[in-house]
Length: 284
Image 1 (cartoon, rainbow, N blue to C red):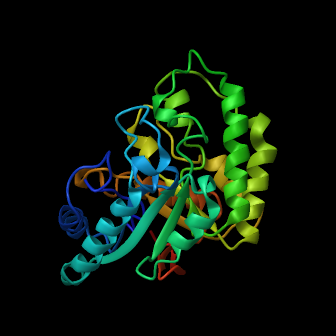
Image 2 (cartoon, rainbow, N blue to C red):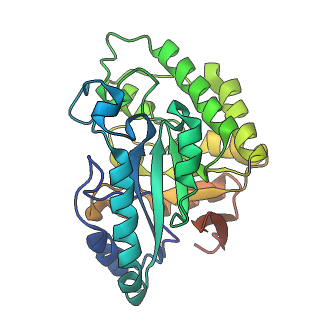
């Protein structure tokens, strides 16, 4: 039995498809008891395009994510009763991208009382497009990664969220898509600093299993960094498929559970009203 899927998207996100009901139907078929829907809410494009006075750099850069969040929370709130009848605990989440663009705005947004769960993610460096859109033949990968982990540390020190999303996100594109090998050891002290800040702030990390079904072929993060987080005292861990369609719901979670156990975890959690609910994973 799968314990949870705490990172999913629907067509409310610009890169997602399908509906909340389709996710719930799939969860029912899988026997998945806990489902968090976490639409993209990019804090550097939270308001209208007119507010920022800039042009989108690519087709994925939509503005007015405040409306995205409101639509998501209204939809999820309305769907909860039906989900419960299907045996699914449906949680109102969000994936807060680039909270470092405006920490004050991000903090106030995360205080919405309808929210159960907030993932903090860094999809793009400030003033640059998403890592998905970069031409790595024209970029300095070491400089990109140093800046990535530096900005990630700022987010971890801020700490007004529940878990940090896909710690090694850029590798999805640098290694998986561009085929450029990356050794993370030069950034290990930055990663340690991120983990220490998360633990000090009572935040956790997610084991994002999307990489298993992508060219990268590995989760975010891999076993060695799960072990490092655990050795440093990290206890808060969620599992998320990062599904952008109902068909991908729950994919890789079973592998993720085994990986977490290998890293020394005996429990994982999901969040209700921003509080962790721990589940034993030893028997899974």
